[in-house]
Length: 91
Image (spheres, rainbow, N blue to C red):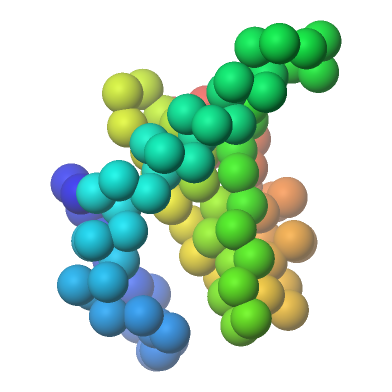
């Protein structure tokens, strides 16, 4: 992981250590599997993956040679990811 930051005033559901452990292999494994599906069909390329947890949602987007992970409270995640998705993909 190159960079990790939490907005001030927010409480994380996971520790920084857990986030770093997930980012070490999680995005590569998950996007790699999803790309197998995209390669065989006409649905298009993978834009991002969303992992929904009980309280939290995480959007994983490939950017250059790495991944950007943005998490949001699950109650507002759809709107947050919809608002910022194109901007992240165009980094």
